[in-house]
Length: 293
Image 1 (spheres, one colour):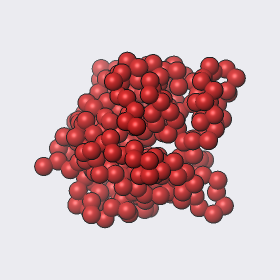
Image 2 (cartoon, one colour):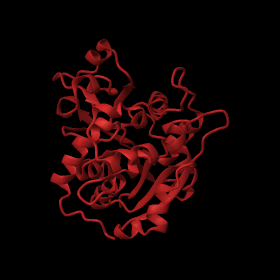
Image 3 (tube, helix red, strand yellow):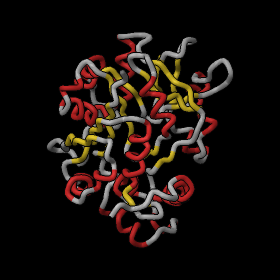
Image 4 (tube, one colour):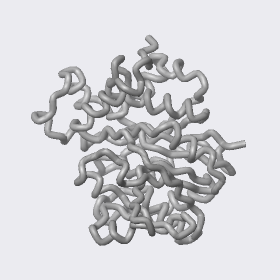
């Protein structure tokens, strides 16, 4: 039986959202106020003004996941308050939701990064040892299909290999996405962040296809855990990043992470300019997903 465990990374401080130029974007004033005070995943979007994270969880539940760990920031109580104190989780009757807190170390203004966030999640769930789990972002809506593909894959570790040409972002943004290199059997060789034009060219497969990572993986708890503990700080961004941990893991264990090709768009909520597209997508894809209260 497939393990139905999943981690959602929601501990960031939404710095890119708050640094966005507010003068150039038309947004409902109430929602604009929320962007200054709430994390991205808790912004009220869609016809019923629900938290963005509700839509993420909806697809997760539809895909068949059941045990969910949400990584939250130590200074952001809104996720716990909504799902636990205000009854938000009652709408997801098939999900068991727990929380792990990612703290901000002394002397820093933000958390230590995605590898550190995942490490906190796994430390909170020692009962997952010997099992596998999926991990995804809280500011992306991944399709039910993508989530199912990962859960049902038979490899010890896997990731969704998104076809870059199917993503519907502006060109400059797509060119900044991490590209992936894999061998002829589809196993990951490298995740290249902030790739140069030369690195993008090298990432092309025999058919000219370029695969990108949208930070959705499935891992063996036992294999990935020590690499999360040992990953160093990035020399420029000074964070412990999940792609770095993955690259070290696959170098020590070649052919250990399979790439699953998929050609479809991924909804992303990074900056204020994304809100219009998010609202349009939710109107089309979640027209009957009404507020339970």
